[in-house]
Image (tube, rainbow, N blue to C red; front, side, top):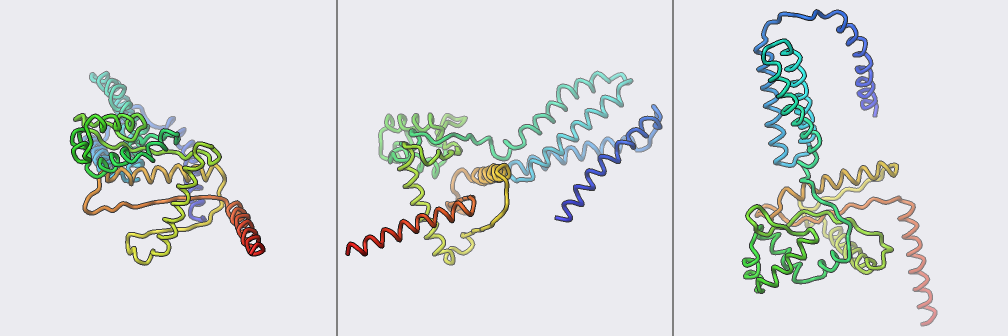
Length: 315
């Protein structure tokens, strides 16, 4: 905490100190100045810019979290490049070329890098609210078989899927059309069917149409969590888990959740199709106020004890 405060104080102080320094430079620097190593300065700058582009590309392909900061640094260098090119060439014959490059190339590219940095990492995964149509798809054995086949095989044609599943091409095409409308599948550049990344947001538990679905889902979650906890020692390096208790505001918790979703999206997109080195990993995140969880458990325990007591009396 102390180091963080010291760093922030240093950054804030630097911004304040620079203001009189800028004023001093504005009144003291000459309008013209001959310098040595002019060529080395610009070549070195462009080498650094190329290095930033290369690093951003490598990190982006790996969906690394450092891709965002590197893209921001690359955008900053592009803005600096445009600034100095235009100003230093203002009285030169090719000044309009510098202006055109700045307006048409460098500044727009910098804006794209800044605004699309997140999408480069998470691929712009769409988010949709869970609907009754999504639940129907989850409960449909044929559509789930199609999804499972595509997730294992990668891109396929409707005919190839039908052959693999022992169904007619017409039935498979009809099911794929329903899945595509819901956002689960789509076509690649070759026209073949592929699964699409999709983040479904759970509806409120009091929605009547979702209540039974969510109850069954939560019961299954508890079963999975219980089995995983009991057999954690047998999972070796494949079993991971962390717990924490923190004090957060509602806005901070919302930001934490958004960052978690970005993190999950990055790792979900690393291997769209299973490989020999991957396994299907179930990851769960729950965050809730301690007092609400404890009061819910207490009420449930009271009801459970009361039911047992009535049962004993009846016996």
